[in-house]
Length: 495
Image 1 (cartoon, rainbow, N blue to C red):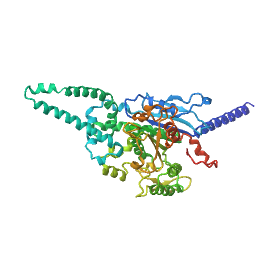
Image 2: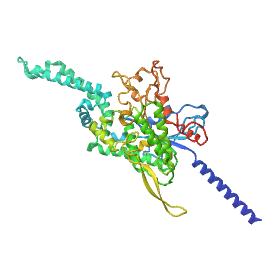
Image 3: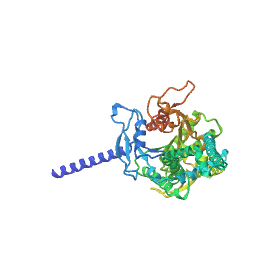
Image 4: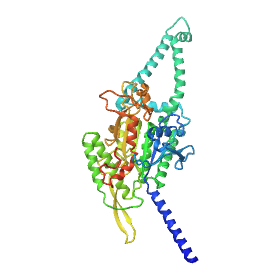
């Protein structure tokens, strides 16, 4: 009997083991997504941006208690970072969601005025035709101020030189406005040390491929790529969203276009028919030739998402489905990322700067052969993949901006992107989510996820509050993607 009991115990243990294995398997099959937030310019502190972002984006739900929990961040290389995890919410169709911050500000320490001035010189001495229309008022105002200051100084020296009754130095002293100008210069110097070196210098150094900036640029990009690569390699996630604010949107763009080169090919080839390739090309052609209506953009982005699912099915490991930009300087990409308009066009044509949708002058997809081994004889099968300049064949790009007008209203830094990086970008003009009057001024650039009661706009203003729109465009209701298999009419990832 002891032997029989021992056998029964072993069988029970084996059954328990199978139960544990089944539990682990079920857990591993749970849908899980990650959101990576990239902060903008300025002397940012680690986690400040992420906490503010997550607090605003997640809606309070008393049934779940705390909106998120703070966990160790094992994906980032910095010990300053934490992962903020929002639990699964079936009612909102939201799977378990991990929020990460890509923090890069520490690589911009030690900025110098010479680095800023060199960048400004390159901008100021361009032809007005090379300046984006949204920045031309600032461009001309800068020239007027600079020439006015120069004229005042020159006229002062000539006035002093023309005085015969006293020495030249005494004549200079009589020009009291010169001393007032000197005091103003000191004020500008103080303000510049806080504003220019704290904010503009970040953009100047990152956007200028000068020898003194190369190391910082490479570190920022390589660490960002490392974070996203690690998220891919863990096997935990079904989907990744990248959200970039201000200069962070340019950094996100650079990270995506470089990581795509690594992860655009199948790692575990699963050859099958790929009907979404033709559907995408047809939809992109329709978009290029037609009007940019919301319905057309929605249809195109749904096509992008279906293509992403098809890529996953054939073994391509790419997980980034959405790129959300907020107040993005990419609106002025021809000024910031190239020497002139011709250089900017060349970089896009040669796939150095990817556009959305990819250029249709050549087919964005090509066929590559793979050796498939299994139980039967080895087979050579073809799988179609996208070329190195086509990450936005399967990444939906959504851009939010406060329209800029009248010199002080709206976001001067951001703007629409479709006319710069392609008609497939969903540009959404928004309005502040608060009633604060200052949030409608240039300060709006840092108000994209500021929570509050949105002020009612004019009757003809169709813009939605920025925070409400951001929540929608992150598409955290990723569990809706499973409704297609359940026969429900709503397509995957719609909002």
